[in-house]
Image 1 (cartoon, rainbow, N blue to C red):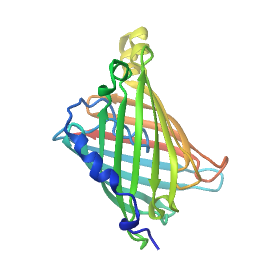
Image 2 (cartoon, rainbow, N blue to C red):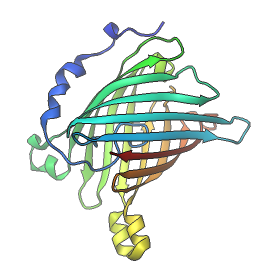
Image 3 (cartoon, one colour):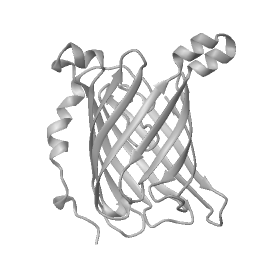
Length: 253
């Protein structure tokens, strides 16, 4: 039986919605790969992303897609809808999710927090199973900071997900890193340097043994409204059939 909303944590929804009032600039994509980012869709804009996960070797082929659409209500609050896990072989965790995400700079903590670009993010998604597993609630909260001088941004947080999306009810750690290559691009110079300067090295990790439990290193290329991401996921159980290539392409309207 799928978890009911009345038994899931909804406190974040009531407490954090007020964080949507502070202005901010869009910096990058709205997810690292699948882990939420503290970047937001700007007010009045729409962000769409298509993700393909694929494997064609080892006798364990698969093709799975996720489609992600957000709208910026303010520069610090977006609403989203996501179609999860549509592909072949057909997973049990096919769901349509509706939710929100917000991010708030922690500048009130002082000059150090501002220098490190310390940011608190949170969100919720209500996944509605398309395979008869009912309705659940996914909630998460995170803190991100950018290390001065090298521009490396790291994030850590907690996620609590339902059975109809994660395979079973689970609470787990989420983490990510992003390293822009803008300085390297400037050092290279020329057209190739400009291309490299629009890239970033990135990675994410979900702890546990659920459907999202993996480490994914990758690279993105972001220019104007377009973002392209290429990564490879390693399941937390080494050598599992969930290992495979991830490709994403997104754009802001």
